[in-house]
Figure 1 (cartoon, chains in turn orange, blue):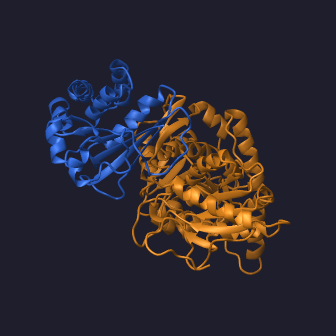
Figure 2 (cartoon, chains in turn cyan, blue):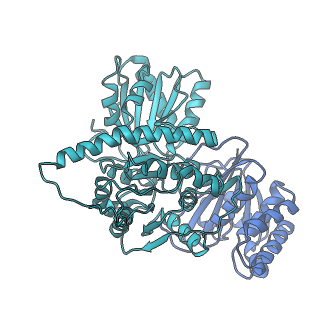
Length: 406
Length: 185
């Protein structure tokens, strides 16, 4: 039996430690992982816990991230609670197996510490890997700080492993800006945390020899389409409902409130920034500052990226005059992902907000309060004149000539 | 909000120093942030680390900082890096050097007219801890200059932060912090 750890009520942890502690408290059966910057400490801390007899489960060292996710798929199909962590190139190498995990309906939990994708090689935080995973069929949650990486790291098991859901779940956090930034994290004791998550109840476990099950089947045109439709249905209905249910239970337990989208200063807002990751918090500061100057500015942080909170965003933006989508990744050849997703939501509103797109922060480029203030200033001009006063897409803080193609 | 920027070389313990400080400050109920930038740099590469301390929840995640304190724990970085970047006239510099304050300012004229404190963290660390790890001496100097906490309180808490290290190393660090506190000027 693993030794417990007596945690302080508030521990000074970085996002990586917050993720590893949530994994430890979940009493995972199998972790198969291959370390990669900036998520390396998640795996490193976890193996330290193992060496110190603070974990009962197995830790499988593998030769690549493709093997790490394959190991997770095998262990999950066998009937265990399974989790791992990765970043960037490692995430890219896992991609093929990510679709296996979701299609096989395996409730694997993965911490993704977001980092740029090469080339050129860069270890710093942006959302390129997060965007790469958005069609993979996983539930994707985004933490804006270390506290949320811990909280979502606990809640993920409860959401993902629900027998109606049985879909894998990623918890994203910003490389370095969250993963290597130590802040106060309010903890749950080992017992309270584990009781909240609950014991793992396998379904269709391969190691349940009394009830044999087949995993990894083949379907052709006769059934593949219906299978995928059902998978989508379950993600959109069961996963979404369960996520809200777990958020509510967590709020009852801790007082910390989570929702599909997080709204800050949005009451009566004329202008709003929609973004993800640590930028949400920096933008909140600027919005509050704008409010003191009589400018009705607000911020929406996307907490659940998949399933996409279409109705929630529509509702939140219905009276907002001008909106900026801030993308920390540039899907080359198109507008930013958030811009396109938001455009779909806004189109159905009676008075669609004027929408503009900002790419920022690639490869870890700083997003300052001054940058955000500039965005709000441009949004205000859009709101006041009732039309777009800037190019549709701009690149924040890019050295050299300004880029805009839309 | 109190903001501190560290200049160090990877391996000299600025991250540990910044996180250790955050840990101690957190026990007093304040909100803290400690982070660093070193990219994929290897040991010996110049790097910076940062602390923020506030009575309110710290929401900013920008790297941009106008620091109240600049802590330089590698002597050469005073010359090879612009340690005064985005500083203001109230910024306090605590710099490790074998030079006296007058000699140091003469050798780096950008420090002229600034609030500069000097001590030799390298020698202190070598003589107390046995290795040139200048992070904890710098914290002792910061306690003296900033009057942030009583020394007894700080030493007790640093013992807790360092508790996983061998006793001999912990004792060395305690001596180093005290000596830096006494010697900084």
